[in-house]
Amino acid sequence: MKAYRMAALLMLALPGLLLASPRPPKAASKAPTLQVTNQNPELVNVSLMMHGEEYTLGAVNRHTTRVFTLPSEAVGSEIRVVASTIGDQKGFTSQPITLAAGHRAELVVPKAILDSRLTTK
Image (cartoon, helix red, strand yellow):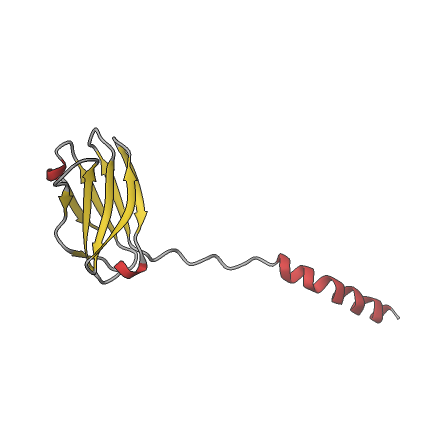
């Protein structure tokens, strides 16, 4: 009789124990990223040129740094980074770069936006 009770208790407790067991950690994102440091006194809009298309990443407020996660299609593709202020006709367009999974590009936008520089890590 005790054996039946023990078996019944185990059957009731087992699903709860399985749900409470620790989960393995999620794998870290392997998408490439772009860190933009805006030293310009104006808000800077950042986009990505890839496969002949322009993809808007977002805006970076003046005197701040923001990190963008790039789309998975950017891995192994030739891309250019574009930075411009509102109403800016020229802006900055980088030379083509290619990023591997997990790599980071860093763009620094100084007061003179045409003097921006893009590096990879």
